[in-house]
Length: 213
Image (cartoon, rainbow, N blue to C red):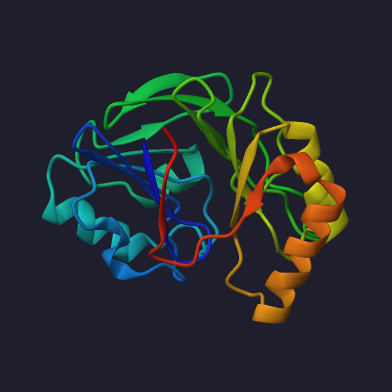
């Protein structure tokens, strides 16, 4: 499995000649969807889901399939039968050759006065990788590589690092990082190294790739 970090919360995964894209939002490069066979979307916020771009990709490639929650699927109505699949906590499926498990139901609380929305996390290939979306969901299975949402209006660095410890992955890559300056990114790295030394925290720049084995 080859992981390529894209802008903000998006990653591209390639295996056996197929490509799976997770959470391509407005802070993600348009080319993130080029050649994609399948797309997973954790929730409806604009930094994870950009409707017009995803519709364009689906219309350009009739074979493209999308898995997401009900709220996002509703916004993608009209793409044709069998193109968009609604999934929830506990579901399993195969997308672009990857075995996927769904973990979690709700977005982290941003503020008590704001409504809480649906959020589904995706674990791939028996825990080889987990993308939690905008939640601190701890899957009830071992995870080898965690995509860690390092900065958001709903989080603080201490909670994020505690989450990495709770998941217990041996390797952790930063995502959800578009709103941090270089100074902020360095601060997260310092705290992750200090508070979660076994998490193997790293950050890939957009466009940089790593082989997960």
